[in-house]
Length: 121
Image (tube, rainbow, N blue to C red; front, side, top):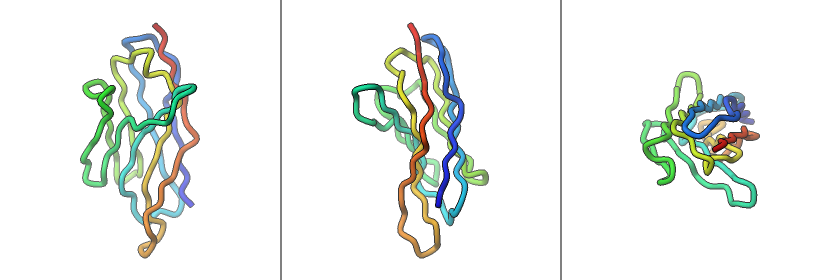
């Protein structure tokens, strides 16, 4: 199976920055899209940013210009640099990857356990 280990969450004041990282390991033949989602209390999980294996990126409108997603294909890692944080960014952030575990496998999605980001005003 695929294991995802997230790191980098924490508490910061508005205007500050945090950097989230996610490392994928285990039975991995290839990684397709990698990304970050978030879920605030009482709200549905929402997409924050994704990046394809060719490094094409997609961002939620609410984070465009403030967040940057990147990946290191050699290390199977995805990183989310979050700048100019606002209280509305407070949520549990989840790493998600689309992986093929064997050459003949269909892609499947895998989730990390989440890392908390809290932004105070």
